[in-house]
Length: 299
Image 1 (cartoon, rainbow, N blue to C red):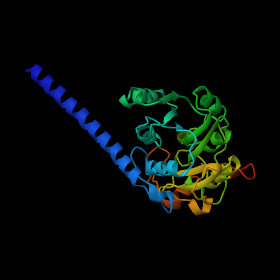
Image 2: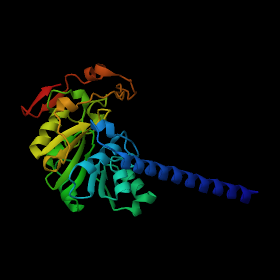
Image 3: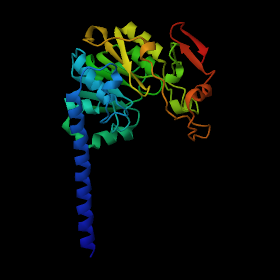
Image 4: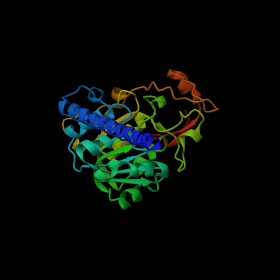
Protein backbone atom coordinates (compact mmCIF):
# COMPACT_ATOMS: atom_id res chain seq x y z
CA UNK A 1 0.00 0.00 0.00
CA UNK A 2 2.72 2.45 1.02
CA UNK A 3 4.72 1.46 -2.06
CA UNK A 4 1.80 2.33 -4.35
CA UNK A 5 1.34 5.70 -2.64
CA UNK A 6 5.04 6.50 -3.02
CA UNK A 7 4.92 5.57 -6.71
CA UNK A 8 1.93 7.89 -7.22
CA UNK A 9 3.72 10.71 -5.42
CA UNK A 10 6.79 10.15 -7.59
CA UNK A 11 4.64 10.09 -10.73
CA UNK A 12 2.86 13.36 -9.92
CA UNK A 13 6.12 14.97 -8.84
CA UNK A 14 7.66 14.10 -12.22
CA UNK A 15 4.55 15.34 -14.01
CA UNK A 16 4.69 18.62 -12.10
CA UNK A 17 8.36 19.15 -13.03
CA UNK A 18 7.59 18.44 -16.67
CA UNK A 19 4.64 20.86 -16.63
CA UNK A 20 6.75 23.60 -15.07
CA UNK A 21 9.44 23.05 -17.69
CA UNK A 22 6.87 23.23 -20.48
CA UNK A 23 5.49 26.50 -19.09
CA UNK A 24 9.04 27.87 -18.83
CA UNK A 25 9.89 26.79 -22.38
CA UNK A 26 6.68 28.32 -23.72
CA UNK A 27 7.47 31.64 -22.04
CA UNK A 28 10.88 31.70 -23.69
CA UNK A 29 9.42 30.69 -27.06
CA UNK A 30 6.78 33.42 -26.89
CA UNK A 31 9.48 35.93 -26.03
CA UNK A 32 11.54 34.81 -29.04
CA UNK A 33 8.54 35.24 -31.33
CA UNK A 34 7.79 38.70 -29.96
CA UNK A 35 11.43 39.68 -30.38
CA UNK A 36 11.42 38.60 -34.02
CA UNK A 37 8.25 40.58 -34.72
CA UNK A 38 9.44 43.89 -33.24
CA UNK A 39 9.22 46.85 -35.60
CA UNK A 40 10.00 50.56 -35.33
CA UNK A 41 8.29 52.15 -32.33
CA UNK A 42 7.34 55.70 -31.37
CA UNK A 43 8.48 55.21 -27.76
CA UNK A 44 10.19 52.47 -25.78
CA UNK A 45 6.88 51.66 -24.13
CA UNK A 46 5.57 50.41 -27.48
CA UNK A 47 8.33 47.78 -27.46
CA UNK A 48 7.40 46.35 -24.06
CA UNK A 49 6.70 42.73 -23.28
CA UNK A 50 7.46 40.61 -20.26
CA UNK A 51 9.15 37.22 -20.13
CA UNK A 52 11.24 37.36 -16.96
CA UNK A 53 11.37 41.09 -16.25
CA UNK A 54 9.16 42.65 -13.58
CA UNK A 55 7.29 44.65 -16.18
CA UNK A 56 7.83 45.10 -19.93
CA UNK A 57 11.58 45.60 -19.83
CA UNK A 58 12.42 42.38 -21.69
CA UNK A 59 10.86 43.85 -24.82
CA UNK A 60 12.60 47.21 -24.39
CA UNK A 61 16.00 45.56 -23.98
CA UNK A 62 15.50 43.36 -27.04
CA UNK A 63 14.56 46.44 -29.04
CA UNK A 64 17.55 48.45 -27.85
CA UNK A 65 20.16 45.77 -28.56
CA UNK A 66 18.91 45.71 -32.15
CA UNK A 67 18.97 49.48 -32.59
CA UNK A 68 22.09 50.46 -30.65
CA UNK A 69 25.63 49.57 -31.70
CA UNK A 70 26.62 46.82 -29.26
CA UNK A 71 30.32 46.16 -28.73
CA UNK A 72 30.12 43.29 -26.26
CA UNK A 73 27.50 40.59 -25.71
CA UNK A 74 27.82 40.78 -21.95
CA UNK A 75 25.81 42.22 -19.08
CA UNK A 76 25.96 43.05 -15.40
CA UNK A 77 22.88 43.29 -13.20
CA UNK A 78 22.78 43.90 -9.48
CA UNK A 79 19.93 43.75 -7.03
CA UNK A 80 18.61 40.56 -8.71
CA UNK A 81 17.28 38.72 -5.63
CA UNK A 82 16.63 35.12 -6.83
CA UNK A 83 16.92 36.08 -10.52
CA UNK A 84 13.51 34.53 -11.18
CA UNK A 85 12.40 38.03 -12.12
CA UNK A 86 15.15 40.12 -13.69
CA UNK A 87 16.01 42.45 -16.56
CA UNK A 88 18.74 40.25 -18.01
CA UNK A 89 17.53 36.67 -17.68
CA UNK A 90 15.83 36.68 -21.08
CA UNK A 91 18.93 38.30 -22.56
CA UNK A 92 20.97 35.41 -21.12
CA UNK A 93 18.67 32.69 -22.46
CA UNK A 94 17.40 34.19 -25.71
CA UNK A 95 20.61 35.87 -26.88
CA UNK A 96 23.17 33.72 -25.06
CA UNK A 97 24.98 36.74 -23.62
CA UNK A 98 27.36 36.13 -20.74
CA UNK A 99 26.64 37.88 -17.49
CA UNK A 100 27.42 38.78 -13.91
CA UNK A 101 24.61 39.08 -11.36
CA UNK A 102 25.06 40.28 -7.80
CA UNK A 103 22.85 40.41 -4.74
CA UNK A 104 23.34 41.11 -1.05
CA UNK A 105 21.73 37.85 0.08
CA UNK A 106 23.73 34.62 0.10
CA UNK A 107 20.43 32.72 0.17
CA UNK A 108 19.43 34.36 -3.11
CA UNK A 109 22.79 33.51 -4.70
CA UNK A 110 22.50 29.90 -3.52
CA UNK A 111 19.07 29.73 -5.15
CA UNK A 112 20.45 31.02 -8.47
CA UNK A 113 23.35 28.58 -8.43
CA UNK A 114 21.04 25.64 -7.68
CA UNK A 115 18.69 26.45 -10.55
CA UNK A 116 19.08 23.93 -13.43
CA UNK A 117 19.58 26.76 -15.94
CA UNK A 118 22.73 27.96 -14.15
CA UNK A 119 25.11 25.44 -15.75
CA UNK A 120 23.65 25.95 -19.22
CA UNK A 121 24.86 29.52 -19.65
CA UNK A 122 27.87 31.68 -18.89
CA UNK A 123 26.58 33.30 -15.73
CA UNK A 124 28.48 34.34 -12.61
CA UNK A 125 26.46 34.92 -9.44
CA UNK A 126 28.13 36.76 -6.59
CA UNK A 127 26.96 37.68 -3.09
CA UNK A 128 27.99 41.18 -2.08
CA UNK A 129 26.59 44.43 -0.73
CA UNK A 130 27.39 46.94 -3.45
CA UNK A 131 28.79 50.36 -2.62
CA UNK A 132 30.42 53.17 -4.54
CA UNK A 133 33.70 52.10 -2.97
CA UNK A 134 33.68 48.44 -4.04
CA UNK A 135 31.84 48.39 -7.38
CA UNK A 136 34.92 48.82 -9.59
CA UNK A 137 36.91 46.09 -7.86
CA UNK A 138 33.88 43.76 -8.05
CA UNK A 139 33.60 44.28 -11.80
CA UNK A 140 37.32 43.85 -12.40
CA UNK A 141 37.72 40.77 -10.20
CA UNK A 142 34.74 39.12 -11.91
CA UNK A 143 36.12 39.71 -15.40
CA UNK A 144 33.56 42.32 -16.45
CA UNK A 145 35.70 45.40 -16.89
CA UNK A 146 36.00 47.24 -20.20
CA UNK A 147 33.27 47.24 -22.88
CA UNK A 148 29.94 45.87 -21.66
CA UNK A 149 26.72 45.41 -23.57
CA UNK A 150 24.30 46.28 -20.79
CA UNK A 151 24.39 47.38 -17.16
CA UNK A 152 21.23 47.13 -15.03
CA UNK A 153 21.18 48.99 -11.70
CA UNK A 154 18.45 48.36 -9.14
CA UNK A 155 19.63 48.56 -5.54
CA UNK A 156 16.80 50.68 -4.09
CA UNK A 157 19.06 53.35 -2.70
CA UNK A 158 22.50 54.38 -3.88
CA UNK A 159 21.76 53.82 -7.58
CA UNK A 160 22.97 57.29 -8.60
CA UNK A 161 26.14 57.09 -6.53
CA UNK A 162 27.12 53.63 -7.72
CA UNK A 163 26.69 54.51 -11.40
CA UNK A 164 28.64 57.71 -10.83
CA UNK A 165 31.48 55.69 -9.29
CA UNK A 166 31.74 53.11 -12.09
CA UNK A 167 34.91 53.50 -14.12
CA UNK A 168 36.00 49.90 -14.67
CA UNK A 169 33.17 49.00 -17.06
CA UNK A 170 32.00 50.85 -20.16
CA UNK A 171 28.43 49.71 -20.95
CA UNK A 172 26.64 50.47 -24.21
CA UNK A 173 23.22 50.46 -22.50
CA UNK A 174 22.40 51.39 -18.91
CA UNK A 175 19.10 50.53 -17.23
CA UNK A 176 18.70 52.45 -13.97
CA UNK A 177 15.83 52.55 -11.53
CA UNK A 178 14.58 56.02 -10.60
CA UNK A 179 12.20 57.29 -7.95
CA UNK A 180 9.40 59.06 -9.81
CA UNK A 181 8.13 60.59 -6.56
CA UNK A 182 11.15 62.91 -6.68
CA UNK A 183 9.47 64.58 -9.65
CA UNK A 184 10.42 65.62 -13.17
CA UNK A 185 12.22 68.88 -12.39
CA UNK A 186 14.68 68.53 -9.52
CA UNK A 187 18.10 66.88 -9.81
CA UNK A 188 18.11 65.07 -6.47
CA UNK A 189 19.05 61.77 -4.86
CA UNK A 190 19.19 60.34 -1.38
CA UNK A 191 22.46 61.42 0.28
CA UNK A 192 25.17 58.81 -0.04
CA UNK A 193 25.39 56.32 2.79
CA UNK A 194 27.38 53.13 2.10
CA UNK A 195 25.05 50.95 4.18
CA UNK A 196 21.81 52.51 2.91
CA UNK A 197 18.84 50.14 3.17
CA UNK A 198 15.51 51.36 1.83
CA UNK A 199 13.35 49.76 4.51
CA UNK A 200 15.49 51.25 7.27
CA UNK A 201 15.91 54.71 5.76
CA UNK A 202 12.20 55.49 6.24
CA UNK A 203 9.27 53.36 7.33
CA UNK A 204 7.30 54.20 4.16
CA UNK A 205 9.81 52.47 1.82
CA UNK A 206 9.35 55.51 -0.46
CA UNK A 207 12.56 57.35 0.42
CA UNK A 208 15.20 55.89 -1.88
CA UNK A 209 17.07 56.31 -5.13
CA UNK A 210 17.29 59.26 -7.44
CA UNK A 211 15.23 61.53 -9.63
CA UNK A 212 15.20 61.06 -13.38
CA UNK A 213 16.71 64.52 -13.90
CA UNK A 214 19.73 63.64 -11.74
CA UNK A 215 20.23 60.44 -13.75
CA UNK A 216 19.98 62.33 -17.04
CA UNK A 217 22.58 64.86 -15.85
CA UNK A 218 24.89 62.04 -14.82
CA UNK A 219 24.31 60.27 -18.12
CA UNK A 220 25.36 63.38 -20.03
CA UNK A 221 28.52 63.66 -17.93
CA UNK A 222 29.36 60.06 -18.75
CA UNK A 223 28.62 60.35 -22.46
CA UNK A 224 25.14 58.79 -22.57
CA UNK A 225 21.80 59.83 -24.01
CA UNK A 226 18.45 59.26 -22.34
CA UNK A 227 16.11 57.32 -24.64
CA UNK A 228 13.04 56.73 -22.46
CA UNK A 229 11.40 54.99 -19.50
CA UNK A 230 9.23 51.95 -19.14
CA UNK A 231 5.48 52.49 -18.86
CA UNK A 232 5.33 51.95 -15.09
CA UNK A 233 7.74 54.76 -14.21
CA UNK A 234 10.32 52.43 -12.70
CA UNK A 235 13.29 52.12 -15.06
CA UNK A 236 15.07 54.68 -17.22
CA UNK A 237 17.14 53.75 -20.27
CA UNK A 238 20.38 55.30 -21.45
CA UNK A 239 22.53 54.49 -24.47
CA UNK A 240 26.11 55.55 -25.00
CA UNK A 241 25.84 58.52 -27.35
CA UNK A 242 28.50 57.13 -29.68
CA UNK A 243 26.49 53.88 -29.93
CA UNK A 244 23.00 55.38 -30.43
CA UNK A 245 22.54 54.17 -33.98
CA UNK A 246 19.07 55.27 -35.10
CA UNK A 247 17.77 55.84 -31.57
CA UNK A 248 16.59 59.35 -30.72
CA UNK A 249 17.62 61.02 -27.44
CA UNK A 250 15.00 62.59 -25.18
CA UNK A 251 15.00 65.20 -22.45
CA UNK A 252 13.99 64.18 -18.94
CA UNK A 253 10.75 66.14 -19.33
CA UNK A 254 9.91 64.31 -22.57
CA UNK A 255 10.50 60.83 -21.18
CA UNK A 256 9.45 61.11 -17.54
CA UNK A 257 6.74 58.70 -16.35
CA UNK A 258 5.03 59.08 -12.97
CA UNK A 259 4.59 55.75 -11.22
CA UNK A 260 1.32 54.42 -9.79
CA UNK A 261 2.77 51.87 -7.39
CA UNK A 262 0.89 51.51 -4.10
CA UNK A 263 3.79 50.19 -2.06
CA UNK A 264 3.81 52.72 0.80
CA UNK A 265 3.99 51.35 4.35
CA UNK A 266 2.86 52.67 7.71
CA UNK A 267 5.19 52.75 10.75
CA UNK A 268 4.13 49.17 11.57
CA UNK A 269 5.17 47.91 8.15
CA UNK A 270 1.66 47.47 6.78
CA UNK A 271 0.77 48.50 3.24
CA UNK A 272 -1.28 51.71 3.16
CA UNK A 273 -2.05 51.60 -0.59
CA UNK A 274 -1.41 55.35 -0.76
CA UNK A 275 -1.70 56.78 -4.27
CA UNK A 276 -0.73 59.89 -6.20
CA UNK A 277 0.67 62.84 -4.29
CA UNK A 278 -0.31 61.29 -0.96
CA UNK A 279 2.86 59.23 -1.38
CA UNK A 280 4.94 62.35 -1.95
CA UNK A 281 3.67 63.98 1.23
CA UNK A 282 4.78 61.00 3.31
CA UNK A 283 8.44 61.78 2.55
CA UNK A 284 8.10 65.55 2.30
CA UNK A 285 10.89 67.36 4.16
CA UNK A 286 13.35 64.47 4.26
CA UNK A 287 16.93 65.37 3.26
CA UNK A 288 17.96 64.98 -0.37
CA UNK A 289 21.19 65.82 -2.15
CA UNK A 290 20.92 68.27 -5.03
CA UNK A 291 23.37 67.03 -7.65
CA UNK A 292 23.54 70.44 -9.34
CA UNK A 293 24.12 72.63 -6.30
CA UNK A 294 26.05 69.85 -4.52
CA UNK A 295 24.18 70.52 -1.30
CA UNK A 296 21.67 68.92 1.05
CA UNK A 297 18.15 70.35 0.97
CA UNK A 298 14.68 69.25 2.14
CA UNK A 299 12.52 67.29 -0.25
